Image 1: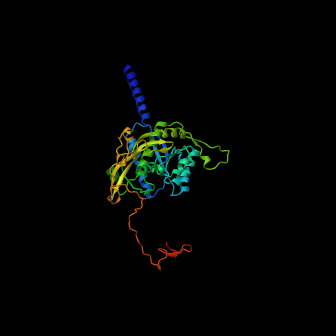
Image 2 (image 1 turned 60 degrees about the horizontal axis):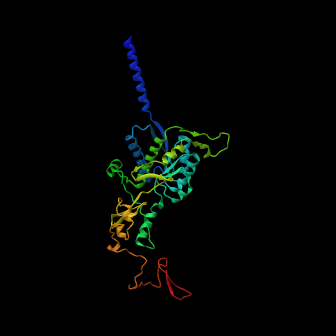
Image 3 (image 1 turned 30 degrees about the horizontal axis):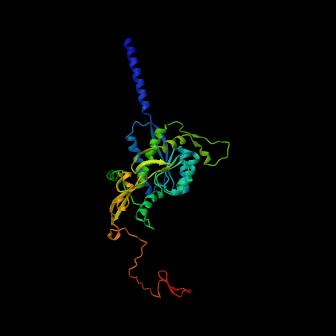
Length: 368
């Protein structure tokens, strides 16, 4: 009899511990929306990076109690399509956050939807500075806006004393952070780009924030059925949204595209590298940081920079066009140079290309 009691006691303890283990293995699934131009070539890389990010994140954190479930809405390369996709995701899937959309114009529509429903919208590709002026707390930009490089460019112009410059923008692709060999092994034929890196970091930030925010109040407050409301108002309010927004705004980590942190809803650029183009090659000549400005090395102490006077103390040696070793001054006109004479036929067969007319006031010939 005593042995039977001991047996049942041991069995009871075993069942209790087993129940605890099963409860610990329970993962709360949290719906997250992704608004993308499905089928467009430029959307493939970010979508692959989003899925890769979640796989990497949870495989390295098996103890986390939440799991993001992606729900993709097709914006059909259209602003109205993006808005319709967001409404569908909130209404039918009750997503707690939306990642995307692709363009700034599409984001303009989604910002209003996110604000009305208290669903954070995190964009990894909408770079228009005008989105900042909308001042919506539920819009977070996990990419650099177009004007982010202005301060670095201004520092270079000031350093060389130029009065006028012509910026040339190149949308080049790169793969720092994710190993190229790994990317090419998994996705041959697709070139990794910066938007993929920002998408990777953005979904990582969401996963961190949702784990920290917990899983209380994963519901929406219903709209008043007695009122005649619009479809947007009928979505209700996300009870989870305010908590998620506060948590997401404070997330900081070392991402694939650099230091990830939001300041007033904007991803803050930490460092810009300055390169000197030599034909098809590029050579690093320094860096720009918000704290220290232009420096040769990132570990340069602010104290040593206060006495800097010439550009050579801020940047490495620069090879200028024509292999010149002096700083060009584009506005200077040489006084001892020879005039260039250009002959223009008075009668031309192609007036759209060149045309000779006579000024009625000065009686001089004008070539246009």
